[in-house]
Amino acid sequence: MTSGQSSTSGKYYIGLMSGTSADGIDLALVDFSDEQAKPKLVASYYQAYSGEFAEKITALYVPGDNEIDHAFHLDVALAHLFAQAVTDFLTQEALNPSDIIAIGNHGQTIRHRPSGNNPYTLQIGCSQTLATLTSIRVVGQFRRKDMALGGQGAPLVPIFHQQLVPQKDSACFVVNIGGIANVTYLPKQGCSDTVLGFDTGPGNALLDDWFNQHHQGNTKFDENGAWAGAGQVNQALLSQFMQDDYIQAKAPKSTGREYYNLDWLTQQLSSINNDSDVSITPVDIQATLVAFTCKSIAQSIHALAQHGNVYVCGGGAHNTIVLEQLSEYLTTRFELNTMDALAIDGDQLEAMAFAWFAYAYDHNLVSNMPAVTGAKTTCTLGSLFLP
Image (cartoon, rainbow, N blue to C red; front, side, top):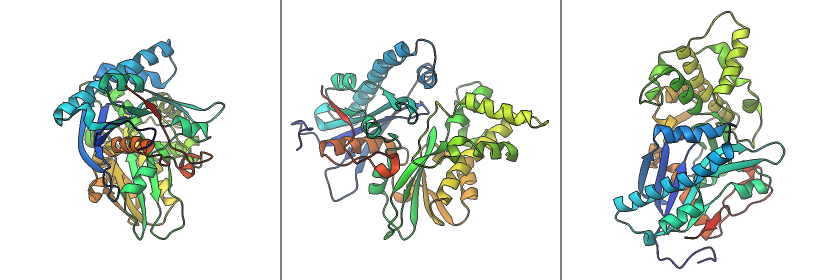
């Protein structure tokens, strides 16, 4: 046991994740006791946010009035929601706080500014409050040390993908389509290539925002891509999307919803409308946004390998239209599956990863990848918060 650990006799780690889609809290209970085996997902839990609470989160993605006050009130409020979710989860699994070694708390990203002067990233969901309310050690703030070392602080999860996905005789890619899409490249067995990972561009964020702007009701996303499937891809608009500065930038790179949002889309539509007498219908814009997500992912994969296996996780793995379009852009040179093909719960993959980051902290394991983030050196990520 290292100096970071307590004398607890707990057996499990909890990973806690709230993604850029701001739809709710994912919890994963993970067992790392067998060091010769892959991490074992024991149980999971999901707690949706109310529409009002989700709006409070997403309002902080862009500058606004009195935002410091709003952000740090929400920092504590979110920690209370996290703590309640942990308590409910433990009750569901008939566990006590003493059964948990630590919680790996990613928190909720509200700003990610990885480039320019004094780059920074900000996650809320106060780890100290969470530790105090749950009586469980919390390891949090995973991104900051990587950024202090000159890295982007994102994406962090490729190092965990490397442990879960077995090496094969062809390249493997793990594609997480959340609010933002990212890809992990795992070279084929015996290849000297380095594991790489980066954000490819927008995932579901723009799709959700545009859908909500044109639909009223309880459904907050284009379920199974039904609306997008009714539209036609506008090739001129898609070509313009693909010329976006972020898409053209080379890795290491990362982005967020503070970049890919409705303001960005409005600027893109204004430009295309100025160059054309033809107006584009909202449903065709939705179809084109799906194509943009899929083509930007496929372009990133094609730049790294000529063929291989692609495994999709995140919300996009449940969107039939997204999977169909991604398959078309990838062509038959790549075999497309969800993480189910590897007997891995793709919906819990990121929450599991942050349980591992807490485990890595306790065991002084390297948990960043400079080839992915651009950091100057390897390190163990995270800070410890005691009850």
